[in-house]
Length: 369
Image 1 (cartoon, rainbow, N blue to C red):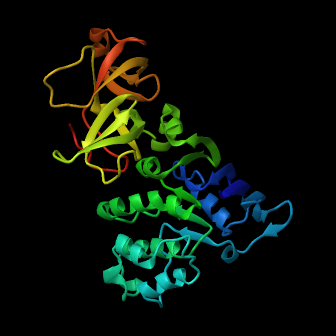
Image 2: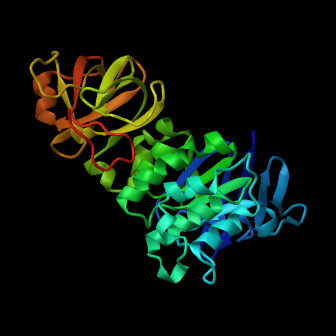
Image 3: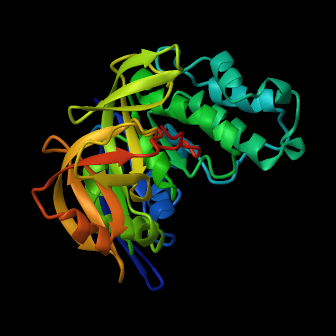
């Protein structure tokens, strides 16, 4: 197993970066508000920026170590870097840009050129030069070139920000599967919480140049104070719970998939994943209602037995009701204070959560059942 160790300090004008974390095989997501230092961390790992103090090492090999005077040039670090803006060779065609990355490829550690071309929809573009590509097309080529370069480490700086929704949906599952086939660390920066929830094995939350929290994705991003850091004012209007689930069966007749969640079941539009696959869901408080008795005769079929864990005021008239499911994972419902009184809700009260919409994290169109 590869381990990337980062412990760096850097000051630029009034901004001070002081970040430490480790990233193993798989996807480590870095998220935080604008100006938190996310891109600076990636640039320092890649050797495009030098820390005032600190160390960057992969599997014990120092890329940068200020105490020992070590600085390995960027081209010797064997890092695949996908920037926010595509950085393609303007004098080369798309095919030649891809082949430039593939020259150093190790067939045992990367995907094939044909797979990358098919997944990213690059076949119609192979003969074009970069100046004839749209921003989204150029970024897709940049991603493909990085994946074909047989890197020891992949850095992605908001790689999907220039892509339309359809292409993003195509690429997200591929990036999600990369660490299973490549067995190397991927550090993925994004401002989009759904991308991090869907892709990351671990998350590092940055704020004002420091690590505000790190660890398991659901555990970290379910913390209200962390959601406020990441989403700002948006989370006050619509908090959401991140749920770990597993596909238990597919209903081909109705084109649905059933997911096990805390001993309960949730249903959503059929997923193109095998039975037993783990997925994360992001369920918004606006999509959760509460009943004190199990309801009958409803079109909403996602009904989960739960226990009230906490009541938290959410403005002058509303309350966020945090629910525990099977003593572990939780949901949040936002209801009025009057509803809390009328239902007699209090910590420990058994209730049923009616989940109106369920979607895989990253899906912008959640279906309702």
